[in-house]
Length: 102
Image 1: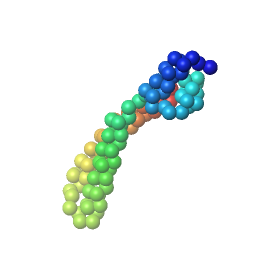
Image 2: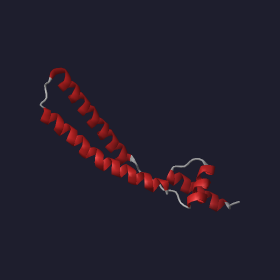
Image 3: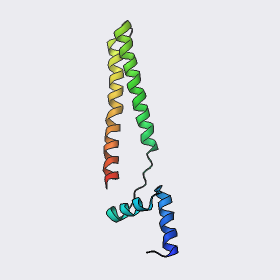
Image 4: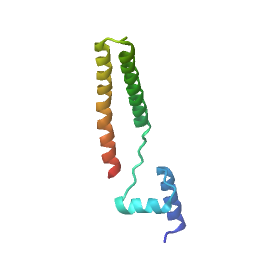
């Protein structure tokens, strides 16, 4: 049971964090005491860049295997760029998973 003012505040907080289901919001608050609102748009951009990098690497490998048009050191440079991008992205995703799990 809540007053109309408390109901309004609850609805406002639900809207702020993007939760539409009252039961889900109440369970989250009862179990964790707080709700984290995490903007994952930068992570989505990193994942998109990661996928494009992987696609470019695969296309280069296909080209090398088919036509032999790239030098081995060029392919190695692509692989290094891919690995350099994947390391920080993996660390970021692990940290985000820990924060969201709280």
